[in-house]
Image (cartoon, rainbow, N blue to C red; front, side, top):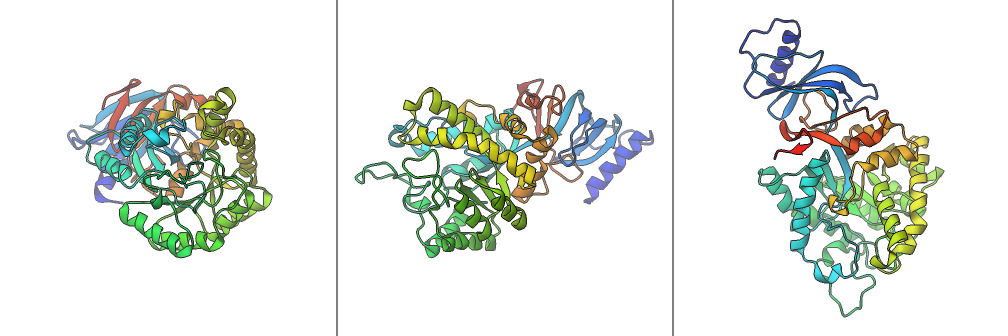
Length: 437
């Protein structure tokens, strides 16, 4: 443990014993008095806990309400305190509209503005970390730099840049358009053959990607392609995974159909996004390879509601696919959970969709998860999928990414949709239900 963490933890222990001399705690020390703590690592809550924070990290967690001399006290003694939420499938630069005309009128500027708005909203709803699985090499790195420089409010942020897939696949924005129409930025998302796929992965890493997303199957929100079809070859998938892993990047695979799911797992991807038509064999393979499933139930519900209520606002073929696919997705999440597949929370939604991203927790519970396991999917499991030991738990050495709610989310999971306190890296962004940054 770093010396300053050890010193701070010792201070908490001494304070609880009444042995801490006045003036010992540093000016940057903060202590949170948590009425109930769900630490993101276990399913068992703790009562009346003190969380000591030094600068941007947690220095220690102690039973009882203790106050090291000189530490600022944040009183959450009537709240339930949890680690900041993690969304492992975000689209932070999405504008929230699926209208077909958007492909002809919106620019990269619109995406950047949407990303800035969505980043702030993510923090406001308790999501202190996201994994963005689809933004351009212009928008995503700029937003990340602005957040890190303190120029704007936003979460910790992994990005895949553009998702990679073949000509005519889910990532091909030319689908459904006249051949005479040219779509800017399309080339960066298209890779045909193992060598081109390998090159695109390397380009993405050069341009700022911190994770790679591939599209082995057709999708729902795209025009004309079939979610059941596997549209990438085994060689293309293996090339992407090997190139990414050699560069220290994990790989997320958009996959709805069983064949694409199974082949992507065997190619070595780190997560299957959606996984709609997985079966018992798919679950066995995922457990064997340690592959995560990210069920993305919120996007399924959102597009389904759109398809039922106003299908005319969706691109051609999308409403029919949404109505066919969505009911299967929630059942698949429950079956995978019961089979013991590792599952991480991901919404596939930006805040601009108009839905609270924390609804994903309730949808997981609807699928059959216990509330405790739904919470762990958005903390311990999500951090593990990202490959980070800095987030996802209220433990010594982790970043002080902390949220609080009224009530008991283990009794009512929808409580997580009403976050009234948010801290990221030791800084308070929301308190008393109001943003202060």
